Image (spheres, rainbow, N blue to C red):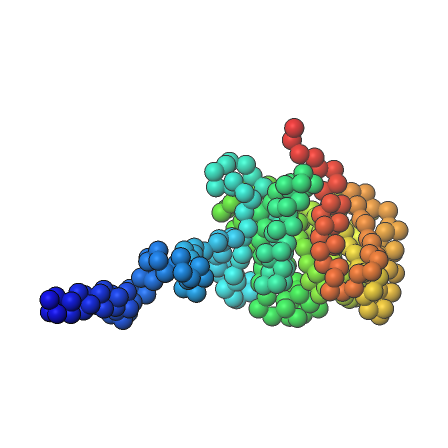
Length: 289
């Protein structure tokens, strides 16, 4: 009788230790989550040891390397395609955005979002990251070669590799905004829309470009630029003066608008510049019914 009772209590003791076997939890760290008794007693068990999330990359675009003979460099080219591009047959405008290591994702998002709002046509956004910004975007240094790279190498490659139209826009901000104006003066045979944000250094074009424009452009060109009212005064003053002089010229086939945006400074003007500028540059566009 005593032996039977000892065996009974020993069995109870051993059964109480089964859930505490360290070998079980060491082999299966999730074992505690599989025990409904544990989660009933401790509702926070799942939070203390949650299952791993399944993750996958989110692809926002593509990239290729263009070997430039003009620049003697390999240049990264970033591409954002319109939604449904791969499944369709339509051709699209090309937007070249400078300073792409900073601006590419945001600018592409603005373009695609404004298209979804039926404000502008969708476009293939082409980003050019910098290698030497102050050298390439200075027309007094390497700017002419960089423009040749854009017009003689990049745009033909885009036409070969993607479904493009002849509608081509170049966009830039600050120093790159100044370069957009240079592209208008020197490369307007390749681009037809120019989006210049808070351009620093417009006074440089007074003697070299401003009054050398023809009385008529061979093809229609449209330019938009803006600067914030709280930008640096030594830049805001020349901006107003230059834009007023350019606006006063009577040039056939040329549309120009400039704005001083209230309560914007050099850092905050970029998104208003893109939104208002794209709306102006495509003011005659309307979606197909």
